[in-house]
Image (cartoon, rainbow, N blue to C red; front, side):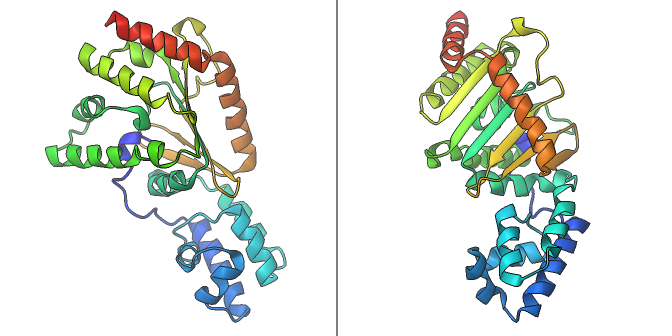
Length: 278
């Protein structure tokens, strides 16, 4: 998921499997003679969440499915439908869904090999990225992107109980995107953010060579229900990952990356040396 797209998309597009799950769920709810308002407290979710799931606009959390099976006595039908939803390959329409999950996440892991993750960027650094976008963005589009990025960055201050882990290639900083002044400001921001106990940054040194993240960026998050989701992206497409086997692979790769990267303390020392050399 390209950080620059967050906040600019609307409701996620419905996939056939999401619509199918929603229709099956709705049928069992109506069979039980329950309205959405009557049903929602039984599964401990809001009526608006139930409505979004039944309309195929929201990915159903695993714990929701388990509670629904029990409340609706669905004979395993909902769990069966959920398996197909879990294998759905989401595209760009999932951007908004991921942003919604981020807002509730208790753990958020990010590996980047292309640019500084959006949550850590300064306005000046982000503006350079938007100025270089192809197709070219208008001034109003750039300002909207910057506003969306600033709003998203509130996650770091508004969620002191959430764990944020970043693994970033050293050369992403060494590239000096935007010049010395912008890079110095960027490093200062990263050093300030990572003072928080719940925010951790590790740099992958350029001397490392091959590593576990050569297949591309990785994003993982954990929901309050302790369910994990992932996101991987390409140039103009993205994949929302819910299948437990695929999540397991991403977890293994991220764990390996953390072991290959410098420790948080050594990463801070390296950043301080980079800043001093500018």
